[in-house]
Length: 340
Image 1 (cartoon, helix red, strand yellow):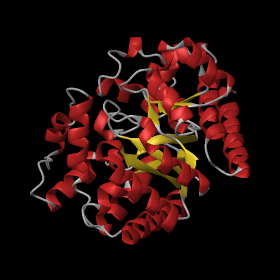
Image 2 (tube, rainbow, N blue to C red; image 1 turned 180 degrees about the horizontal axis):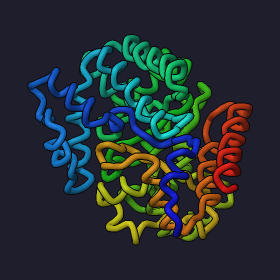
Image 3 (cartoon, rainbow, N blue to C red; image 1 turned 90 degrees about the horizontal axis):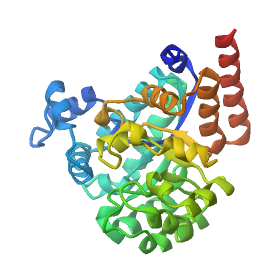
Image 4 (cartoon, helix red, strand yellow; image 1 turned 60 degrees about the vertical axis):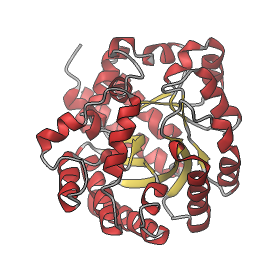
């Protein structure tokens, strides 16, 4: 295969499954850790690399929450959000739906209005300064139970920041059944938000069915176990329900043993609509460009194939139709010029 790295680096992209705190670069994490010395998070970037080596999904959640604990005031929130956008700009990400977990910050004492103001201020500045358009998915941390669901839904529907487009559910899947969150998703959907829960990452296909039937999912976060159920794969393909795939994340959390065993190719061969994402990129030692390179290898894609994959994310994003058309045209123009 040709080296697609230069093509991918310059390719205009959208990203649909990437976490707010999980996108904190080692530099920002180290800076926050230095500001909050009571945290177990190392301040040395090399030590951070060891800290971000996960034994399993449960250990990942433990480490993730220790980083969440570094976000203690609105200034921390604003700094993190803007710096995430800066890293995205370096990768030619034009648009991103960033999964944000307000409950993790409000339960630590950041007022909900201050939290919303901080991310919105960063969003506006990022678009003006960096050319990156951020939109929000407000995400229930499943491990925190129904109290967190109620708080997340309240902030989403009552404060409703301008950048908010969707409502999600993350955290551990084992022991956190999806149906219990149905009332909160119903209220969010009634308020005009899209449903985008995680499902089938570390559990079987039934979790995906539950997300579809009980949470009315429009996209599925991860969905790695979908290939275990041919009926489910056919349903996802027929109804064009996108899967937000993040290969390196799945390996890092041990949801999938090796890249060679990753179900991405099976998903595509079954006719499923897939998008490529980085999930928690610095924590997993990756970025969106690297994930596209991995996908190109797993799917045996050329440059045009990679561009088509990038257009999937544009197509199934929650951008306005005119913005989708504009970004898709930018991808086409870039690709045409690169292939001359």
